[in-house]
Length: 104
Length: 536
Image (cartoon, rainbow over all chains, first blue to last red; front, side, top):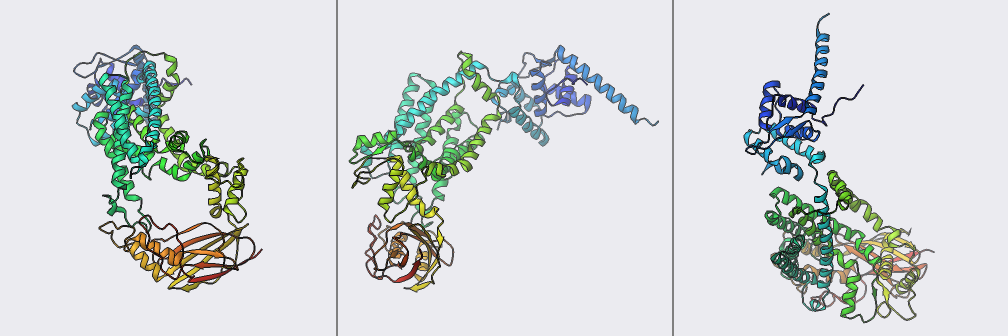
């Protein structure tokens, strides 16, 4: 079985951040709010920046010019590709799990 | 406290500003604070490659480090010279205190000059730190060692024969931490960080009995260094020779390693890397070490563990102390010393002694150490223990008699009214409010001198009543009731036979002088004797 793409730890927050950035560039606070709305998950400041640091280090997101001490981030092509692959896997897993939960 | 300070510097440089902006916009819950700490920990132990410092910057750090090392070495030599300047010996004050004060002035002047002319930026900070550290050491030294010292009421009477160690130690540690806290503003340290760094440095290289370097000194480092010393002590060594010996003797440097390490560590924290291109290859090894951020911490832990547990055992082992496995024998300490020197390749001419013949320090120290420690290290063969005797209100009890070759080792105890009376003076319920001179009959040291001469002198005599040469010994009075003096007496026997252990004197001796007893002569007959039979 081929190894799945690596986020270097903080996998779930990384997927949530990439999902948030798939809508467009956003800075840290906006990402936190967006993730709370879309997934009901609160990203603490330590978790958020641990994941951002990993994503940036792996070229999955990139920083834009800061505005008023806020630095927006944008998802890269590699980030989109990885997010797409990971979400498809999750989709399959979700589908299989739901099927198995259905009464036979 | 700025929470972003919990993160590594390289991380702060990249994310610090936006992270602080995020914290300003967020109402942090306790869970968020825990999450922040977890994130900071992660940033320390899993540094991301894109945040690492550049090779040029690391190379610059290395260059600065080399400059610092050279300056630190020069400072070390200068401090050794200062405390051995002959003119300082004539002052009625600890040369180390004077040396520290003079070093503070010199380093302060050097730092000021370099700063004024803008030269060698890494060095003036180091010299400035050395100046303040030496000044602090001199002031604390004055505080705890001057006659009628300010701290005397705190630690007097902890031991009957002198002052204790704990309060001065705490003062030294507190002063060291306070100095770093005061410097924190200039060193760009936060209060908590300054306290932690100050405490860590005091526990590693501070002058107090609690520090690692003092622990090593007390557990064999001094002896080890004296063994490897190339210095040769000879007759009539003048001032220049003494200064030269001090500079060649590694022992001289131990006391000053702490201040220099202290200053170097703080300097590295104080300075920021300068922007300047230097060749990359210089930095590669250093960079690899720094990138593994846990490595310096792990190295520190390894050093502490080795220094606390492995090094003292090695320093006390035969490999270091007695590599020739010399065993003292015979009934003459001079002959033992001569034999030991021979075992280590030094032939003392007939009729010569340590004051008239040049003897390498290392060999002399080694032999003195072997002969002095032999009685406590050798186990020996047990002999029957005689019954206790009582005389002059003191009961003498022999607890153990052992023989190893010519060495007779006797452990004994003394208890009774005179011991209790002395203990009441030595261990008062509360410290005295004034310092008593050693010549004052109320002082513990005066009373101890009397007690020792009257009741605690112990000698081994042969059949004719002649005194057998001793080899060390001593005693202690534990601070527990009922008070009992625990003594040890060693003698070098000419052979098997009947001997007598004799305690004390009947007549009070002359009053001790301000410098303590010099002769210790017993003026009077014995008050207690115990017969000892040594089988062949």
